[in-house]
Amino acid sequence: MALKDYSDEFKADAVALYESTPGATYKSIAADLGVNRATLREWVLRDRERRGVAAATASSAGKMSARTGETAPSADPDERIRQLEARVAELEASERKLATERDILRKAARYFGRGDELVMSRFQFVDDHRDTFEVKRLCEVLDLNRSSYYKWLAGRQARAARLREDQLLAEQIREVHGESGGAYGSPRVTAELREKGLWVNEKRIARVMRTFSITGIRLRRRVRTTIPDKAASQVPDLFQRDFTATEPGRKYMGDITYLPLAGGEFLYLATVLDCFSRKVVSWSIADHMRTGLVADALQMAASTRGGLDGSVLQRPVELAQYGSRAFADLCDQLGVTRSMGVIGSSADNAACESFHASLKRETLQGARDYGDAGTCRRTVFGWLTRYNTRRRHSANGHLSPNEYERRHHAAKLTLAA
Image (tube, rainbow, N blue to C red; front, side, top):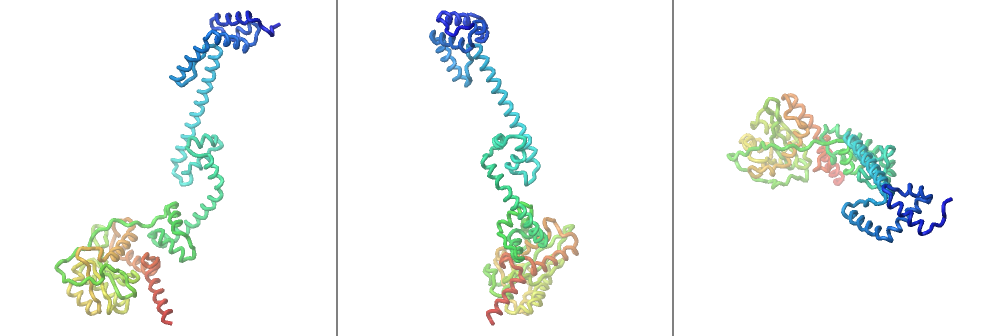
């Protein structure tokens, strides 16, 4: 029967037996003595403390911990075993953590590599893999705040509703965009939708167009084709870079641009624009740049407007066609006063040059040429007529030139009545 109260001599002998036995463990010696393992360990530690062994060991352990950052090994074999077991468990846990992180990152690489717009959200990735991994671990690996994820999760229904609304809006935008020949950006699309009774913020239109990859035609680099003719007769600059007018038929702009064909050939387009509405009043297309090209355009303008008497025509610089004696005589015959900007300055006919740039940007749509002459004529003719009747112009408050003039005349009649 085991003793419940042990004499000091018994305790001293037990400690001596443990300390003198090579490879001894508390468990084996305690079994031999018939005492509890913890009781034997307490006797040994108390004796070591009395003899100063524990203090020395603690000091040594502290130095080792300071150098390595790890727990110093115990001189007690049982304690050493426990330390090793704890270290093994720690390493196994660390290995499992690293393996989990590796699996998450591999899945994330495949997930985000698909390039789908819907799955580019890290929150969406967490939600799609929460049944495989812990949400906490997913958020740690993806550097997310868990509270932010749950907030995102709570707003799922609202986001789904907005997505459905954006998809419906995108269909309406595509319809308008298609009707414009793919030319309209967000400002003109917004104006067109508002005209149809759908009042939507332009910023939202722009966002939806970006999301669904609906883009207008961007301006290409402009090539300078207007070359001054310094030998031509001088005429005054009556515009002074003011391209506005209070009434239709008062101020016009004229210019020529080239239309590239396949094989390096060209057609040439002469236009006459009204400064009031930016309406293309007339145009002429030919395979030459002789005076007849601009004369035909001016005669068509007189026919369209029912006369040009008292109007002013601005030309960009001293083009030989506009400075010829024949063209000057035609202007005098039609009652048109000629105006000319500074030699070599495109800014003095910027509105007309901008018009030509828009024409080629929206008809060529990135192509190098129009193909054959017949295709070129049909394409340009279709765009010019649509420009007047349907294309919205920013200078007109996003109204077409025809509609802008119609409203102006209606307002005058109202005031007169």
